[in-house]
Image (cartoon, rainbow, N blue to C red; front, top):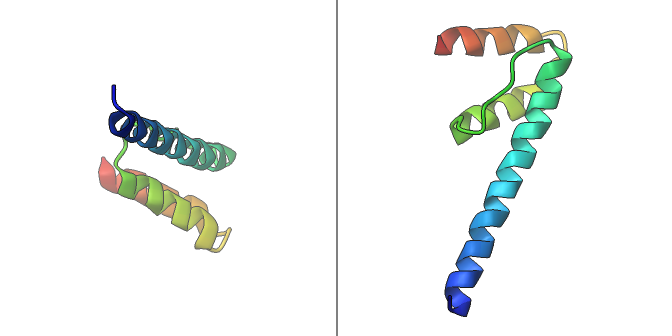
Length: 74
């Protein structure tokens, strides 16, 4: 493996680790509201959506927004 391929592999692995950290953080917050976890194969936009509502929304609205998102996807 040359140094460019090695560097590309390290960047790929680093991105995967960062994605798992994001999913873990979102799952920990969802757990506080007794909701199911996000699977690592969820689309990036789903993770970002949950990150945004968990951070930016009024705490009184979060459970409703989580429910609406899961209901829409089913």
